[in-house]
Length: 155
Image 1 (cartoon, rainbow, N blue to C red):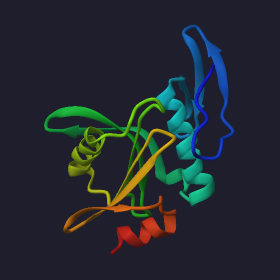
Image 2 (image 1 turned 135 degrees about the vertical axis):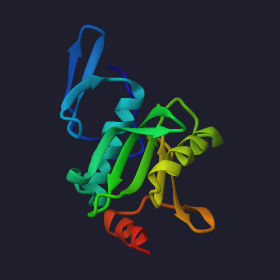
Image 3 (image 1 turned 45 degrees about the horizontal axis):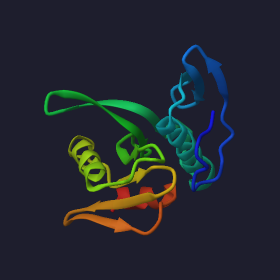
Image 4 (image 1 turned 180 degrees about the vertical axis):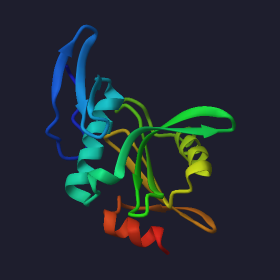
């Protein structure tokens, strides 16, 4: 089970062998899922948002289905505000995948439906965050904590 060391604190994850390799427990979905490099990033990043950035676990969801142009898509992680509006959309890639404009285009398309104010893209090594404003997207040099997300959401 050789997975990359990430550029976030390690999370206390539960991993078990399975017929096809390994599974990791996803506390947000409440079930075991196939352990892939992208899933490794998802579990560590979402745990970091909860433990270090103050995101309430109860306001987060993984693999959320949306309909975009008549097609079903899945967002990697959505964090909701306290009124249950999407506030943050996170898109993950495996550590070996470079973050490109194509990844930002993907999350921006999802956000046409969700209308969240903060978008985050991470491969576990590099993290990019931007804020949606009336003038478009503005990159942030850090990942905000939940209290700042709430302020952004309500501005």
